[in-house]
Image (cartoon, rainbow over all chains, first blue to last red; front, top):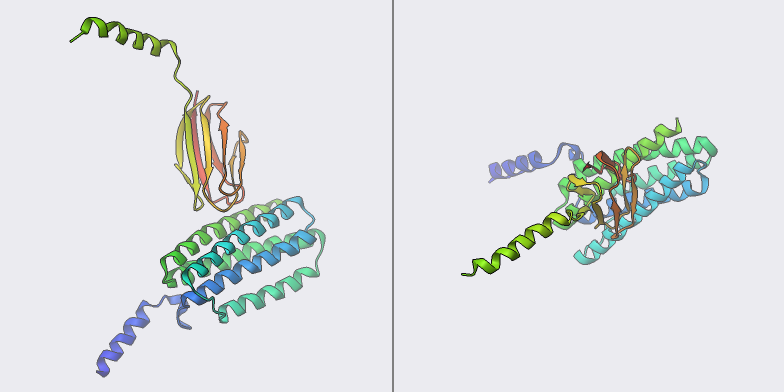
Length: 173
Length: 106
């Protein structure tokens, strides 16, 4: 009996992705919350950029972010409604939100070209961070097939945004 | 069996097909889930490309060499007529990871 329990625990430990070694894999309601939060963060950053950005390219980029992330989140809301899932707040969402509000405050102190550069640099870093989380944590942990598929589309969108942000960053130099 | 009657018709059909030049074709290129398909298409000058965006996101078909730049709002289509021969690589400006190739023969 005891032996079986140890074997089961060992099997569970082995099947958990390495990135999650520190904690249990997020559940679908938590994953939905993290993905939605990640979108809201980028929407808020884009709204700030629309007010503060100087460069035409940076303004246009912010407009693209706003449009795409609102579209993704609209799909996410429709999906959680359809699946009857209530998104559940969690430590990852909280950490992302905290990091984002610190960044908003930091960028708020900048203006002109300095703001443009800092906003775009953060967009590159932020999308990279979210892509990493999607690939190693959120997509592998998602149980529901439709949720997984939406996250996979989200990953492609975010990868596109990362490349777009890298192009804009290169143009600003 | 009426070979005598069918022969002139057959001849007329052949003659017609020789006079009327090949019609310009319409080629469909679809963008769905951030993937352009087919990723590589051959067409001829004069052909029409029907760009179909099935995503809820806006996309563009932007030629690297500047030959065309089509904007596709969510769930919308657009057409463009090919005017110049060449192999054109194009991408989506909003999502540069969406890439494809159009081979346009003269």
